[in-house]
Image 1 (cartoon, rainbow, N blue to C red):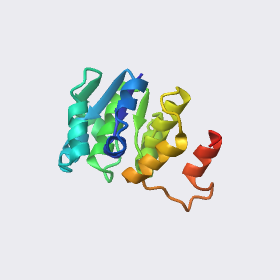
Image 2: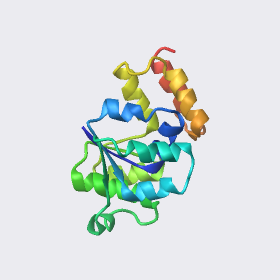
Image 3: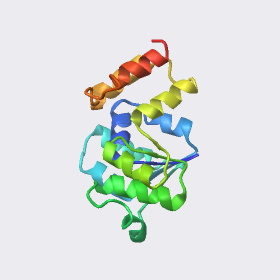
Image 4: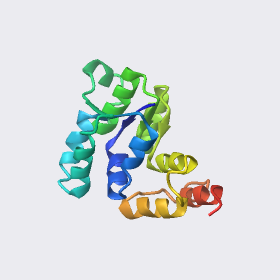
Length: 165
């Protein structure tokens, strides 16, 4: 399975020490050059971990083609735009985005979308992690922002309940 990752999920997973889940879940992880440029600005340990991660053989770094970028909403960040453009260009199985606008744009282009929480859910379903509550707590500590005002209730609480924790 080929996935294309945006900046935010990569940073969250790196800060939560969960980058290894991407390798365990997906055969090919594509990281856009534009995402790496956004990450390099961070100059912290998670950014260095991501840069090292992109050296693994199952990770491909790729630059988005201009003609594909032109079809993606211009007001989004460079990393999101590139992730969507590359996912479309490759016919990727999944694009990993956390920003709601980016997710809507990806769906508008017919892409399958998940985010950092979705990666954890898939890891739990494949028995790669034992506790959804502790994994979600790690993401929140790593900086995951959740819109608690959503009418469907707190997303983390729903996920934890679904897994009987």
